[in-house]
Image 1 (cartoon, rainbow, N blue to C red):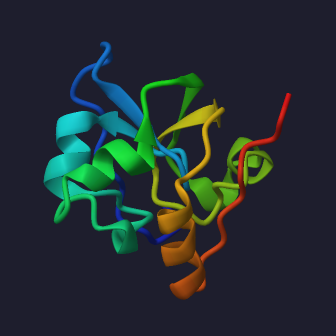
Image 2: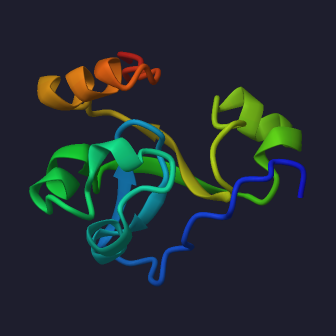
Length: 118
């Protein structure tokens, strides 16, 4: 594996409980975000403040891609997830992070790219 990042959890189910992180688009179940947070966005502290799971993730997303080696995948680079942990990602989310969470990203000096308006 070229990325060196440990892999993110793979969703334990592919039903209605799937959610996508609004910052990095990682896809896991609600319970997985609540228990372990987001591997790419630990500063959002979803595993510590469970209200953050509802604020920082969405069940409304389009498509799923599995990425084994993000640093070498053209699809991961195209989706701008080439520096994230290997795992399952959505192709697109339509919601934005709440202002409070955007401020946390800014404080942590991490990029947040809001979804494109269609």
